[in-house]
Image 1 (tube, rainbow, N blue to C red):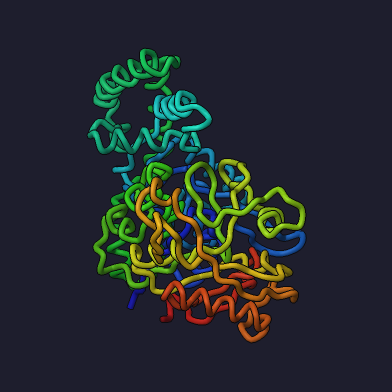
Image 2: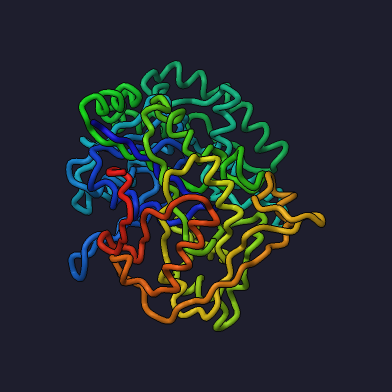
Length: 440
């Protein structure tokens, strides 16, 4: 009987989902993206020594590096067709077979030039103090058009005359905003039309009814892996709004973003760093200084190589926030946790875990809703002894230092979710399995 697993980031993204998706794909025949766009960044390290290859993926599901695995992009993803074709070419130039294994939903809203221009112009208008910290890739404006029912979707490309009519109407609207309100340049209609239609024939062979394809795969007994992007605390409904992304990043979106019923989602694994990071603006209760030599936050930043895959921005770092994880666990209905980057904490004498907050004179044990309340939270810490031994590459639970095991057990207790996997390095075999998602 087929089993389907959903992989979710439980923090502010960048938790190491790509490696875990790649590792889990050993037991799956299909990998599915269901939200976000090319603002996601998954880095995969495959092989060792001179045979090692590093793949940086944005749109194509991480399962593409596994021979014979089918990959799907669902309707919940906003699609930059030019970026998709560029990413496919880079992967194929690297020796991977892509086009005959990748299927894309015709319902994906298209990211067009005016979306990118709007995204950048808005951030400039907000100024340094009020900017949200978007990637400037047009993701938010495209989701806005989708909700406003004026989006151009992938299937529109295959009807050029109709596409042109729709484009002219929506471009008139957006050009007015660009020029009269944001002080930016307008997007030329003919240039946008020609650019969009030129990509249509290249993408058409990959277009498929994703909902039907996933149901057929499930019926045939194939295991499916649903690959989340970003993280729960960046979810447009449940994150630190307005410092969030523009899509739903939670497990329920795996259903809405692909067209499969919730009953087809059997296990939800939450990917969680052994500490906490965040890119961009917004409140971060357990944040540490990352510029003081020898400080824990600096070690997390440097040893953890905390640079955004997509943005190239330095990530903010802080202690593990169990109160934030409790909210993520409940929103996603987590079956188990995968703790990543445990080795980054090696050598820190005393660790701290944020167990709750003081908020307006009261103690709360769960991250509040919305950025305003979160910004007023003062973290409450519980100290735990660290360890001096090296945990990098360890692949057996009993080989971890006692204090490292105690730390993981305490996280498990505080978050009320079992730790099923521990990732101790970027490569596939640098993994401790306590309970396998496809076997649980």
